[in-house]
Image 1 (spheres, rainbow, N blue to C red):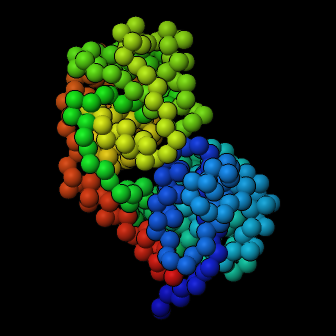
Image 2 (cartoon, rainbow, N blue to C red):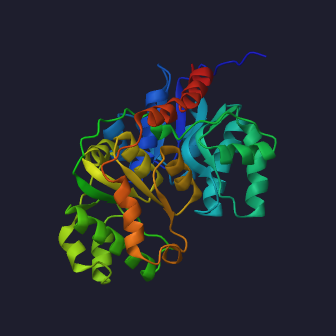
Image 3 (spheres, rainbow, N blue to C red):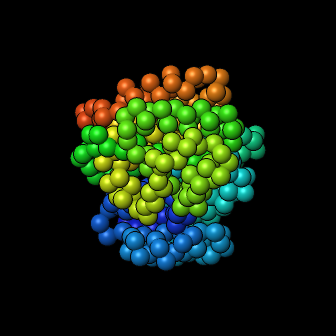
Length: 356
């Protein structure tokens, strides 16, 4: 049976947009670039003014469900755009928010598209039950990773798999031979003071050995900004690392990529920080607080260390630093990155098929 396109003119794009997270900004940029010509997007956003100014789109306040549901009534289709929106790690309430939108769209006969989605974590039995019944409401789905696709397939929903949609953004040429060490780090409940001391001692040793500055790039404006100052205040940074360190705030994904493109090594905790660094051609190493980060690191072919129990895995900071040293000034293979980029075509095809 042939797929009938929506012939949509106004489409509600729903995601974690306008929350001052460069990763979600990058997802929105990728989604807007893949929309078919003639589609008029309405974007859910927290900082509406910033999103409207930056992307030139209309917005509605994403934290007001009643208002978003009213906006949906005036749209022709609903697109859940990138990230892991169907999860309960943030809260069960967050899952109910997206469930309400999907159910409302379905009751109104409006197509629901899950674009470049991750699925889970779903920690509650009630969450798994709910999502297993939401997925059949979607007209079409594309997953960003095989694990999400496998989970959905276990509930009877089969859909194509691609790489994370952020990989579709235009790459940059790396110019960072001999450049700074850039840290794209975040707070994590997995890191106790002993774990932080290990990481910071390893970075200190690496930076001293190479005689390079250390730039701290906050990927989330609220959550990551000030991490350097906080760690210094707690007395966790060695004095020599304090002297080499500088916070390097950026406001847009392309600014982060420009910084990465001049780095000798990027050590990233955040998934999209790792992806943007690789798109910039930069040598990478990953610190994984979530399996999705390890999966991305494996696809790039860069070193990856799990944060959970890191001080037991690496009792000697010098050994951890040695692994990073091997990656310095060694960018990822261009052919490998291009192959990952090609895998984003399944997300574009979903939009072209169902919104054109």
